[in-house]
Image 1 (cartoon, rainbow, N blue to C red):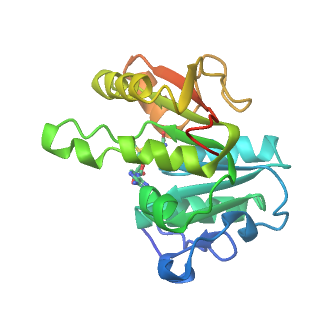
Image 2: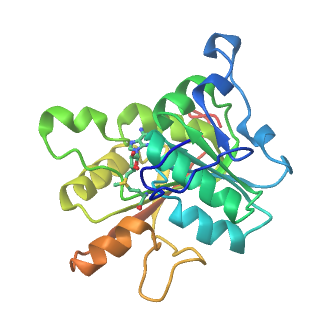
Length: 224
Ligand SMILES: C[S@@+](CC[C@H](N)C(=O)[O-])C[C@H]1O[C@@H](n2cnc3c(N)ncnc32)[C@H](O)[C@@H]1O
C-alpha cells in the first residue's frame, strides 16, 4: 500500500509489478524477462527509468502486440506506474523495481530486446557522480548483449552536458553501435519527441531536446 504520488488512493501492483524478492538469486543464472508476459513470443522492449510510466501507458496501448518492461528503482514511481498499467489493463506491460544496470548485468539473458528506451535519464551533473549515469562504457556493452541483432538503444535528454556524454560514448563505441537519427514513437504528441512526463515539464520551461538512436552492430569480433 502506498499513499504518496497517488494522493491518498491505494496503489495495487498485483499482476503488473515485479519486486526484487520475485527475482531468483543471480547465482542461479540468467533469466528471460519475456517469460513474465502472457504472450512471451511477442517482440520485447524495455524502458530504463520509467518514472510515472507515461511513455509506457501511451505507447503500449498503441502497440498491443509488443511487450514492454519498465524498470524503475524508486519505489513510489514503480508502484504508481504498475498501478497505472493495471488500471488501464495493459497486459503487455510489466514494471520491475530494480537498478536497471544491475538487472541487465546480472539477471537478464542476452538477445532478448528489440529496443532499450532511455528518456530524460538523471544527468548527475557533478563530476564525482558521473559514475551513477546509466550510460557508461560497461553498460553500453550490456545493452549490446541484451539487444537482438539490429536492436536499438534510444536516447533523449534535455541536458547539454549529458548529451555531450552520450555523443562521446557513441563515438567511442562505434564498433558496437551505429548512430542514427531518432524516430519519434507513434505515441508522441504533435511537437513532442517522445512525450514523457519530464519532456512535458521541461517543454514548459522552454528547454531544447537532443535525441539519437544507436543500432546494434553484429561483427565477428563482437558476436551477438
Ligand atoms: C528524470 S526521471 C525521468 C522519468 C521518465 N523517463 C520521464 O521522462 O518522465 C529519471 C527516472 O529514472 C529512474 N532511474 C534512474 N536511474 C535508474 C536506474 N539505474 N535503474 C532504474 N531506474 C532509474 C529515476 O528513479 C527516475 O524515476
